Length: 405
Image 1 (cartoon, rainbow, N blue to C red):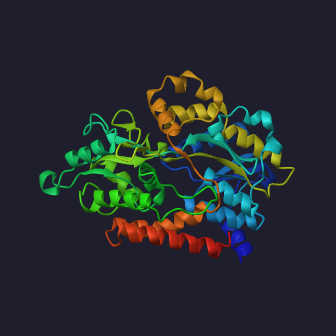
Image 2: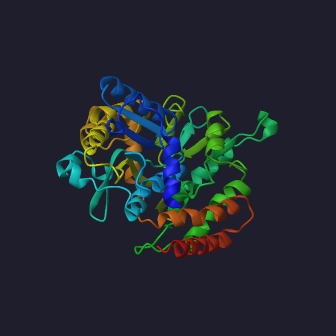
Image 3: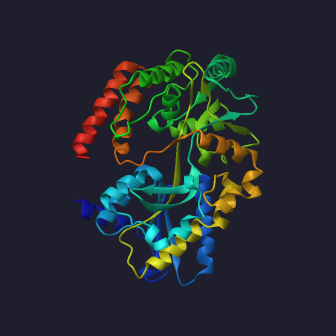
């Protein structure tokens, strides 16, 4: 069934390419959104205009759909030549054998041009060429509403209460902060601020812990006691509330900064310190980049690698820095005045250094899925933090058993 699903997915997404032989067409599936997507499409149009004998075709897909469709297609022996994902996908892709190791085909010299944080290795091999590092959450605040961002949790709660306004006062309520609390990824800075983590050194989930309970209680009280967080939210709602000035702060990543008009209208700041517990709120830090489908035929591989190098080149990364404030992976760009003289990127680097590396272990997928339902019920006030932590652990362990990992 997996085979036929993969074939049907790929066949449904194929598009015409002006009569070019398929061996001269490089297909790229990616998850870039909004401004990032627009720049990628612009860069690809320029490449295609200069190379009439070949063509790059890009297709945007939501993150979960991208991963599942690529897995289905590649297992069936088809799929795009390149797939652009975050580094946490590498473990699953390697386990299922759908991507090829790149150290053999690109050579060690190629990877020496990249910063260590931009290299994605797993089981001693290189599997991805990243065009940005970080993908990290930060605090973003509306400069018209907040002059100085909070530096610790005490200031954080104090500021949230000060800037929150009820509907009677403003016509519609303004919240102190918003974030996508449908996804546990956005909860991680709170978990680390209380000393918690997702798994132990052996990869076993560590979700039913006192640290998890304290972190869940903290975020739950922001919504249900202090009422400084929207009663319902997901990524789109949070994004809209902040853009409309109905939330003074938002927790989001570098992909959003250009749309939030950083630094004119908004500004970024490192996530605050929990002085009571002695821990920083540490976001996950990962690289994002391109993996090569294991099904790419040997005779087509040189063209695919040429496109891969173009999409991660110094020139492309310079444009990403200038337009998107992405933190680059190429050492030549990192060491240039473009990055070293940019105060926003220096703040971003400060947060990157204070972040936790994104686990690559395949079990991370089961942890996200096991956390999600209980986390949403806690934020809705339908489950206590203690009950939620127990359910997260139990659900995750069941998912791991069911997947036979």
